[in-house]
Image 1 (cartoon, helix red, strand yellow):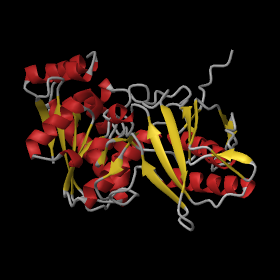
Image 2 (spheres, rainbow, N blue to C red; image 1 turned 180 degrees about the horizontal axis):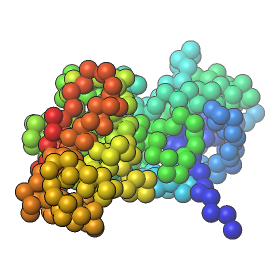
Image 3 (cartoon, one colour; image 1 turned 120 degrees about the vertical axis):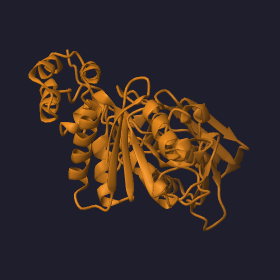
Length: 367
């Protein structure tokens, strides 16, 4: 039996399929079901329609057509734990003014851009450039096939999108009212984490556009709270980097902000101190030997180093060192700072590190 994970389709691919089906129905009175589209890499998946609505029907050129057509597909993200898996992605297509081309609007559940720094101007619906290109290309194909002008208004909606968006970066990025329509390839690769890394990059872009000179890359909500309280940072200067320290550092190397604070728990930042840039438990582990080496480098005796070597977790090692009066948290913070500085190279970014325990107490700092 195959154990390979199943690929899925992006919101951009689903919106493109719904748009192609809706515009076909607008011109011919018939919805193609399933509807097949071409993705940027050349794949041609077919999508089943979950909704078919034709309104304002008239008779033109021998076929029943309408003034508006709506088609929708249910997003299948494959085996990826995507927040939009199962969401209903709709496209309503109406005729536009002659020569207007393809115009986009945000329907219910699709956000609007309210901050600079994103690849779309403020005030635009949050439909990213590649999905827009895909929809324009498919509108042109349908127009050529069925004698249309290609001048249309496309309204994209996501059922429940406003609630789903609260579980994404959108509110922090200034995308309000719903989700973004995303995708560069049209394909969701399970556990590729590309959406999270892209959100980190967009978060840095927004912080730079807002003029922030200090951002914090945080491993979770507790470290975010601590960084905000320590430095008075606004929401759009807080980067939810999760396990992807490398994504933050590499993007800042190319797009620098004067100051970066890295904030996180003792376990994840121990891995960063050990040179790991992906802090996920499935892809890197805390090395007790490295922690024992830090104890020795700080003058700790062999008895303490041996107990740290046998510790169950980095937090356990921290407690052992606290009892002995040795600042393991500061040593981990300094190691993490060195790793970060090594990735940033010559970029004009000053780095400091804040290490916390599970309760959010600061247990180490460096820089």
